[in-house]
Image 1 (cartoon, rainbow, N blue to C red):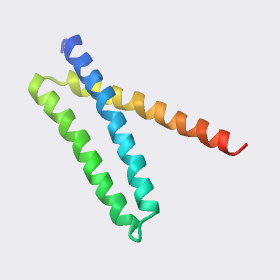
Image 2 (cartoon, rainbow, N blue to C red):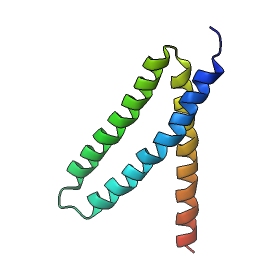
Image 3 (tube, rainbow, N blue to C red):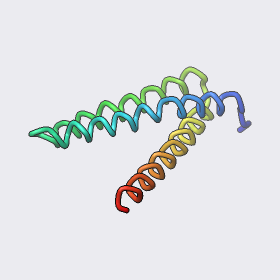
Amino acid sequence: MALHWESLLLGLAAGLLVSPVFFLGLKWGMHVALRSSKPMAVILFSAICRISLLIWIGYSITAHVGNVWPAVGYAVGFLLIRTWAIQSVRVAVAQDSR
């Protein structure tokens, strides 16, 4: 299987653009859930929406291109943003605990 750099970079770019929306949705969903009388319903709805959007966009790009490389790039983009988001939260919590 040949590596298709253009497809990989397309998936990576999409992953880097969509993943912040996923994590901003997580932040917003937790904010709303913590102030809600039914937090589990809010968390479940938020998760379903975010995960569906993430999968739908990744699948659409991969199906449009017709090979697996956009999915690989998309996953790498998501993991890069996820790593950055977790590190940002850790730094913010460490600063707040001082």
